[in-house]
Image (cartoon, rainbow, N blue to C red; front, side, top):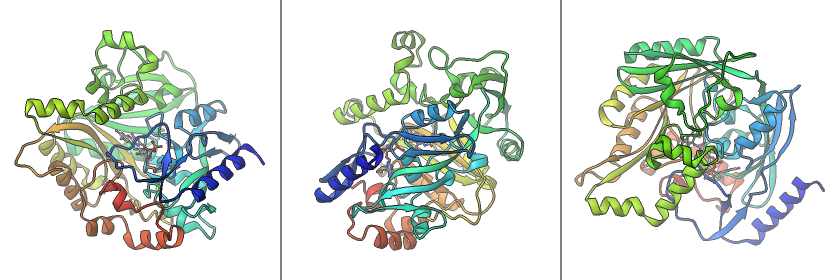
Length: 443
Ligand SMILES: Cc1cc2nc3c(=O)[nH]c(=O)nc-3n(C[C@H](O)[C@H](O)[C@H](O)COP(=O)(O)OP(=O)(O)OC[C@H]3O[C@@H](n4cnc5c(N)ncnc54)[C@H](O)[C@@H]3O)c2cc1C
C-alpha cells in the first residue's frame, strides 16, 4: 500500500469510528466567517498535502486535496508549468479552492479553479471514497462540488490541468479616469493576448487595468516581498517585470492591501519583521488571535464605535459591472477594490451551486475591510445592501465570509433543488451538515 492509500485508510477509520457531525482538522484556513465548531469528529487531514506527480507533457498535476497552492505551485514551476488558476494566498489549498471558490488574474481565460479539475477523489460522510469525473457515474458530484464547502464530501485527491510558463511576467498598468471606459477596456483586455488580467480601483476617477504577459527575458525584476509594496507600484509605474513566482504571489506579501490593519505597511516595521513574516499566513494568525481574545471588539466598545465587517468577493456580469461599481463607490467606503475578470466557461459544463451562467465575462469585485456603522442600523446592514445589489444585477456572491440571505432566497440563488438531490445521494445521514447552516447560520 503506498503512503497516500495508507493515509486514506486511516482517515476512513477515523470517520467511521467518530460520531456526530464531521469537520476538517487543518492548520490554516482562509475562511472569514466566525464559526461555532460542532461537537463530533475532527478529521485530521494535515498530511494530505503532497504533490503526487507533475506531467509537463500532458500538462496535468496529481495532488492531494489539502496541499497549499504554494507547495503545489513550486512543484509545478520546477517542471516549467503552473496550475491554470493559482489563488493569490499561499495557504489556500487546492481542495479548498475547488470546494469553495477561488480566482486569479488568469481566470478571464481559464475560469475558476474548479473548472480546471479533471478528476476528484472524494471522501463521503459515510466513509466511502468515490472518484468523480465529468463523464462517469459520479459526474453530478464532480459538478456539484464547487461552492459546496465540504458539505457533500471532502476532496482528498485531484487531477488538474496545468499550462507551460516562461521565467518572467511583463506587467503593464494602464490608468483610466472614467468607469464606463474602464469596463469597456477591461472587456477588450479579456479578448486580447495577455496571459493575466486584473485591476485595482482607488476611486471612480482612478482605475487601473494590469495586464501580464509571459516573457523569456526581463531587463530588470522588481521585488515586492519585503520593503516595497506591490499595490502602491500600480499607481507609480506603467510597466514592471517580475519573476513568474513573484508575480504569482504578488498579492500575498501584503494580503492585497489588508496588511494595513496590522500596521505593517510602515517601512521601519517591515525592515524589522523581515521577508519571512510578511505574508497572509502571519496575518491570518494575528486576525484569528484578535477574534479569539476580542481585542478590537473591546476597544470599539470602549470608544463607543459600531462597525461592520464587509469582507466579500462578488461576481457581476461584465455588462452590469459599471452599475455595480457606481453603487459600491456611493455606498461602501472601502478602497481600493480588486477587480478580476472571469471567462473561459465551457457552456456545456454547468456547476449548479456556483452558476456563472452564459458565455460572457463576469467581473469579480473584492473588498475586504471593517467600516463604521451606526446604532440604528440592523446587523449586516451594508452586507445586505450588497447582497441585494448583486442579485438585482444577475451576479453571484462567494460564501467564504458573512452572508445574510433568508433560506428561501439562498436556495434559489445556489440551486437548492440540485443541492438537496446531491445531499440525499451522497450524504443521506447528514454528517457533513448543510450549506445554508454552515455559510449563513454559521452552525
Ligand atoms: C480575505 C480573503 C481573501 C480571499 N481572497 C481570495 C483570492 O484572492 N483568491 C481566491 O481564490 N480566493 C480567495 N479567498 C477565498 C478562498 O479561496 C476560499 O475561502 C477557499 O475555500 C479557502 O480555501 P482553504 O484551503 O483555505 O480552505 P479552508 O479555509 O480551510 O476551508 C474553507 C471551506 O472549504 C472546506 N474545505 C476545505 N478543504 C476542503 C476539501 N479538500 N474538500 C472539501 N471541502 C474543503 C472547509 O470545510 C471549509 O468549509 C479569500 C478569502 C478571504 C478570507
